[in-house]
Amino acid sequence: MAFRVVLHVLLAVVALGVAPARAYDWGLPSWVPEPVVPADNPMTAEKVELGRFLFYDTRLSADDTVACATCHQQARAFTDGRAVPVGVHGTPGVRNSMALANVAYLPVLTWANPTQKHLETQVLVPLFGSHPMEMGLEGQEQALFIRLRADPRYRHLFAKAFPELDGEINLHTMTQALACFERSLLSFGSAYDRYRYGGEPTALSASARRGEALFFGEELECSHCHGGLNLTDNVQHKRLPDPEIGFHNTGLYNLDGRGAYPAGNPGIREFTGVPSDEGKFRTPSLRNVALTAPYMHDGSIATLEGVIRDHYATQGKAARDGGAPSPLRDDLIVGFEVSDEDVNDLVAFLESLTDIEFTKDARFASPFQ
Image (cartoon, rainbow, N blue to C red; front, side):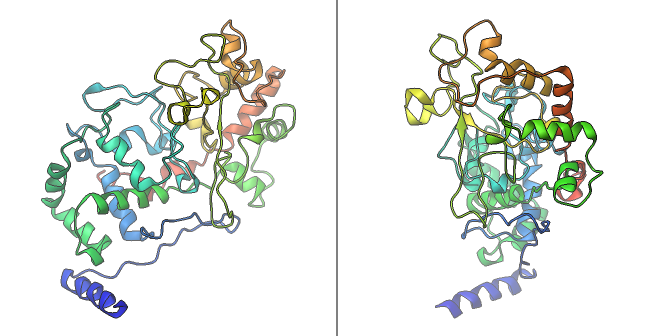
């Protein structure tokens, strides 16, 4: 049986006139472990390249105006600079566009859905979801595949990426390729990486080093949720036997004195039904955070200074806005005092997490330019 399968694949490759797919080279620094990859969607350079075309193609939307890259722009570390994204027909989104850097290391993928764990299925939400409508393709799946099949370039790319499937263009192959491209978006070249792991003691300014000490110190408690490889408490990789998953209420809202969040944005309570899960959202990575404003799940804080001074230092923004601190906020949100110099140093540290080369890497850029 195994021989017949291999023979079928080889015959398909010969018939299509394409070379067998190459094993994927992550190109990771020695201190970074490899991501966990689904057994049924191994990484190949061919699938990544196909996924790059699909990621930037506005034909993957109902009115040819929106691509994945519309809400995930490389120059902004794959965010969009908006409080919430805007989909087809000008439809506003519900939550801030999350950064995609190192998404391969995340065991859960969205702000407030603890069940969304696989890129291959998560991509279906923006493509075909209607609440909110993002790319607006609900009910238009076959029309999409007809468009892609009519393009000689896509016929060639799918043939190279999926020779074992005779280059079939369908929902399965499309989502697998998009997932592979997203997993390739790796960012480990910041000034802080060079300073902490790359043996470059001068890569960080004195201000950023003071900010690092504050960030990882016990008084501010930042690193309890924003630590480790990806500066979040959500992580999974080959050296970690079990995934770490963290959702937290940071006290951003307390609308009724009992911790209520705005209607339609209750955090993971929407899925768990547990009242104490009100306002719990997934901890985002802080890599490239200086490029991903505005902040929080609803984009309600414009600057890093505001996140530090007006939110975390005051036991949550709800308290600063004239109310009481949320009774549902995480135990670590206790507030703290910071001077102007402290805030400047913390921002300098956060800015040192920017990987400039990542935002310019041609491997991640639009192939249509």
